[in-house]
Figure 1 (cartoon, rainbow, N blue to C red):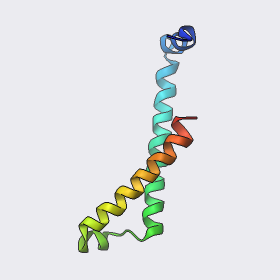
Figure 2 (figure 1 turned 135 degrees about the vertical axis):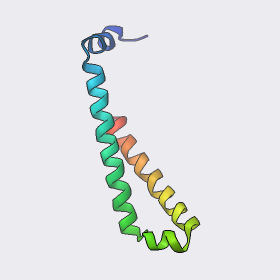
Figure 3 (figure 1 turned 30 degrees about the vertical axis):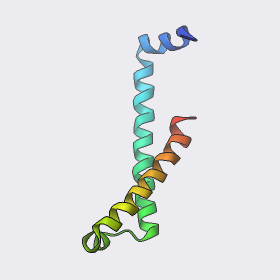
Length: 78
């Protein structure tokens, strides 16, 4: 609705899709790296997964949620 030309030019030239694909790749890489780092820092291991699955799921969901928020603020919203 606003700034149609600013949107239409990259869309028709194919630059928009390439840009969005690059942002998606960056976001995915950062997300996976953050989840792994958080899990390692908090001691979430395969041993925990084998012994207490529900605890492992809670902790991993917490890591994934925090990583998602970080990715949204650092890559997507900026």
